[in-house]
Length: 476
Image 1 (cartoon, helix red, strand yellow):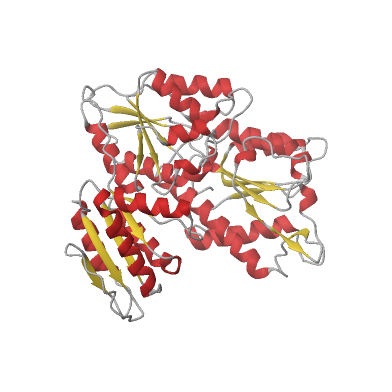
Image 2 (cartoon, rainbow, N blue to C red):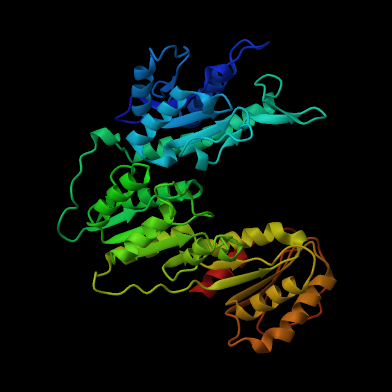
């Protein structure tokens, strides 16, 4: 019995039997992987009697057992591929993958580990080719030969990777258990209910923001009396089928929500603009309201693709913490349809810190993001005209300014404060918050005072509470 309702198996393990070799160890490599993964999942989920993993131990000869394998793949909640040169040369592994993706369509249920990297000229079949994977191999010997990790000889590293994989798979299983979803073949299509409920379409995402999409879906499910969520099942992969299914949902949608990751994602031959761009442009062409989100630390200027860079910088994109975006999205859903949406830019906080104090600077960054503020850290690397220009722009453009004086030198903090005083006349307004945070070890006085600056002194150890309080009060 599977722990996810509506499925026969929680996880289907797809692998090439050539990779399940037995050497001096008691069991085959894949067999040991599956056993240890199941043990790690049981510890994490506490579901020993419910957790069901399908891993075929018999070779497929003459396709005699292939129909059973394909049925098991279709009836599994998640799919784990054990990638290798052997994996991509087998027909039945490709058929297992196709059976699973046709049935679920949800690429966040697809996982990939690598037993060995592919040879030159090889590539994984779609959609595995776009998956982030965990490497279960290492470089060994003076020639740096690629060899699989040994569950015995490389026990510590192997266990770390097993628990990393179990954390990702376990998180997805818990999400599916809290928000039960039936397999695609059992789903019943029905139009959104009439009345005051709004139909919200959650666009298909790239893998790096799947977790955020799960969290957002879980949040919106709480408001079932106000919201009809689409799609009801994952979309089929492949250009024409995907476009037809998406456009069908789009025709009955009030609002499209799209989470944007670091890359645009897959561009199959029959959908050359890619899934991400197609969904964005389809929503705009249909004149359906579009609300997009990205992490505040995702800098569009670092994106090589000019089309995707423009998408990330569009006025429909909100750069904020996910929790702040959830609240803003709910407010948007509750607005009257006739009222235009106004997206207000997030206040920016420049956290000026030396490389030696970057750890505490990132802690302050997290506090800013939790308060729906855009946090900016200084450029790293040796001083140059570029870094100096970036520093000047941040000092003059930010809404709030925090200096970190921890492990750095008195000379550094004095230089930064003098430079700020030099560029300060270029600001249109005074910063809503100007704070100098001094941490351990105890150090000499800076010797520079600003009448409007808040001084936070933590000589015995960093205390985020007064910093947190200042940020919260200044953002109101």
